[in-house]
Amino acid sequence: MENSNDEVDNFVGHNKLKEAIREIRDIPSHLPIYIWCGDNIEEQCGLRFFLYLLRDQHNEIFLIHTNGQQVIERQWNPNLYEKKRLSVKERLKFLQQWEGLAESTAVLRQWEQQHIQEVSENFYDSLIVKRLKEIHQEQGHVDFIQTGTFLLELLARMDESPNIFYLEYRIRYLIYNGTLALKGIPKSMWDYYVKICQKTSLV
Image (cartoon, rainbow, N blue to C red):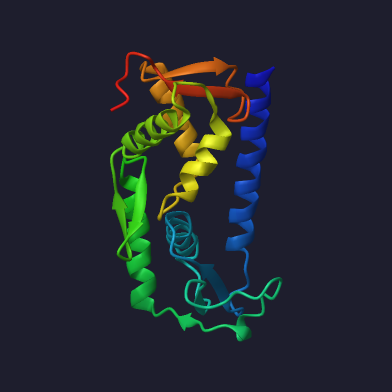
């Protein structure tokens, strides 16, 4: 049943994405488009994908950078915020960057110094193991820790927060390669516990 549910979720998600793309492409050409974007990898990649979808449209496009200005709760009137009109040259640059991302085989990227940087798939593994070791040392012994709780605590310590589900994917990889031990059934991050395997040094 779990696999069946995953297939249903994937089907629904795929259809929602197709519908969103259709709505974006159906925006009338006389309407200005305002894109809200912050300094994080998800929104920066999303910005480039969005502009790729709009590559054949002639709408005026304005970028509202949410970092550095206070976003008013439930106030999405673009006239309340500083905005930048994207030139044809800037739009072309973003388009070319998306095409490069689409051709890349990298699975993990970071937003660093105003640029998208590709990093290795196991980039966060050492950080995960290091923090688990620290927790075990604080415990005074090696005990299981709920995965979801651990990941939230780990994210709170990170300057550039990656997607929590990517971190959980790396947790599962570390279980499969024998670095971490598992207790429970990993249906979701709240359903299982992890700890450093006894064979792994805590120093």
